[in-house]
Image (cartoon, rainbow, N blue to C red):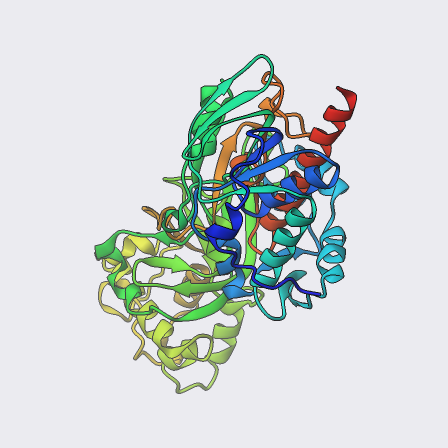
Length: 457
């Protein structure tokens, strides 16, 4: 049965303030990874305290997937994660699979469906997932302290002391599960990274990921008029994280939908490639994947009285074809928009400045010019000026260096009892439920490890 009252109030969650201030485990961060770790450790008999500074529980889960939470992906494997060490996530993902999480929520009666390419969503609401996690924590007798902020953490011999807004707490183990800096409007901070640095852990430079890309405002003006236009594309970039890159870079490509915005490009294709993109590097967009446009355009010339714009409009939404041909002509004439049309230079001896005009008859355009136009459509190379930032990012790339952590337990190698899980670790998943699966898997790995350590001790 799906638990009720999943949006538990702060009063409910802080009802046990007067309990023993010492715990076996203190988990900081009551999100996906944190609740999973707390429930796993508590189910195994440990005294667990779960702290979060927010007023409302699990806001990131609540808004995810359009309110229905894309809670995992059936195809989750190490291949869908970026990290300096691409093998780091292997152990945790193998030990707790998408099927394991499906079995958990199914036991509570949560109904779900597969939407696209293995992406699983709740039939009803993200609240169902929050309810399951809270019920698991309650069944494990986890002590909630929320809202509760942590001002400082100090190492003891052994264990840790936390100075919080609810007083001083001590524990043998501390788990950093506060996530990354994406969506600061929901309370996201760099807390985990600051604490990790305090204890000497190295950090891989954090950046927004799964985020829209932006471009020079002046050069983008013609394309800004296309805001809301979407189409299927293939987008690629060179990346050190691409399979086969090893010590250099290799192409990384996604075949998904692209969305034009006032400031740049978004949609699943762009969000995916943004995780691999580095500032100053180009991205290449094939606006007609799977088609041989040069051949099709040249063959269409025979006996055709249609204008070029009419033929191109048959490929795309008319707004896109009109803007594209206009920008194409400006580019060939040396106008500013050409900076965003850095593909093959098209030329036609029938248009001013050597550019193609939409009102030209297709039959009057040379084969050479049509091939060049097709090259540009298949290989639109452009250099973003940046991203839409953490406010629009779904996750953070980078984080605590995996070299600092045990891949089976998520414990810091040189700081016994300190664990880092979820988004705060340098493991970033693709769009489509992969980051939630990492949260579940890393949380379970941590919870099991803490319990095993307690038994051994």
